[in-house]
Image 1 (spheres, rainbow, N blue to C red):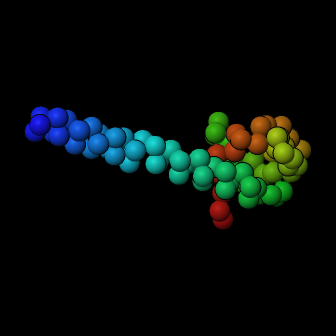
Image 2: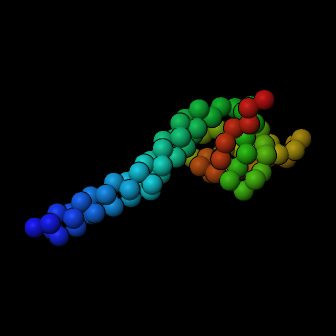
Length: 87
């Protein structure tokens, strides 16, 4: 009886550790990314996942047009924005 209780407790501890170390942080990252996507607006300075700095000029549901230099605009997937630059 003691051996089976010990293995059950070990299993529960393993599941709890997996949740706390893997699943919960991933859910937080997804929530933060979703919040960022909802808060994007024209004229925001951003950095993309590829390291490109730019200013949002046109924004729609799926894409964003970034001005990376004066007169140079690139179109990217909206999900490629990694973060806003707060000044």
